[in-house]
Length: 555
Image (cartoon, helix red, strand yellow):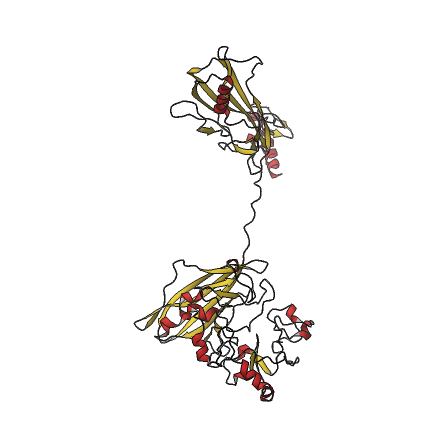
């Protein structure tokens, strides 16, 4: 890697800093990036008058510490320099040429260091540019899009990216560091300039043109999709050159098409599978780290003797971590959901003994207790044991499982409310038990779950109020050679108290007020005329009633 400035489009090499001469002073009155009078231009490191800050390097990234002499212009304005390379100094934003009278005073010192190499030094003397290029490491497809030819770009002084920072890259095979490039059109031409760096948090899409030839179809790496992700790793955060990189610092660029894209080729006067659009999508965090990168490529075909338009896009997207799931709101139970109990410090589904294939009792399988589902299960039990305590322990495990719950979940959700469980076991007398006198053994279990509806009648919520485990016991003589039946019963008891309507339950004898169905025809000033108006002599009565009804309707 040459410690000089990156090569221009032409054949001239431009050193980044000639010799080790002391830093001269750039005329502070000339600030080429001060485009807006009386306004602080963003990113302009010499606009100290309008920004009212003596040292803008603490605010803007990319401000070089070195001070340069000579006549300078913005480096993007110049793409080829036909001058002596020893008189040229290139910074992050400026292209400076020293006058001949200044260069003569340092000619000897400059000549010895203008062609010095950082990694490929020739002990016999200076090398030509062609020799340097020949001895440089092979960077495969991605040479044009990520190679760092010089240190003229932003020097990262912090362990995170800031706005407008160049994005550092690393080649796995050659162990060469660089910056991610985004080809752009030149200053006075639409042809692609591959040396343009992508800037952090600058989402932009650029269009530029490339010239196709039958030979460049398969040899130009800018037309090959592999050039944009093969062997390239992005640095998660800026790392100094002297610091060894670790795998945790590198971010792979994942192609959207896992199988990859076809390579370009020339066929019957046409170039096939050319890259027409490249889109990088970089995910970053609020602390200035790159956490993921993807690339998508669109291919197109074109004539092998024409100009080809390309689009290069770099987008940034904030990588928000998935929200931490909060507690599920407490809601009522629904029919058929498992009932949750707390056994010791563990919450688990409550269960009862299941039915084995042969009908014998066993610890497994067991059936879950489902809300509002009343069940009865049974099995047969026998044992050759002659120890009462052992027989009692086996039957308890068959009926209740490992242990009976102490609490039952009243509601659904990740943090439910809990209700107490009452357990009633077999009462064993203090006198010594024996097989001859008989052992007190549980032979059935009754699980009673009390529940009720609460809330509005339109949207009731089902809550469990408590549960009771009742073991029914009997004295048996051992050994239990003859099998006996063991049963379990689960019963849900509805204890809902429904409130009475405020006016009582409607009765069939109730009538609608004001003679609802006759539309008020029989109502006259609050009283009903029950006289017989069918008599022809009472025409006046009928007319009066009709008039009153009409007036009431108008009112």
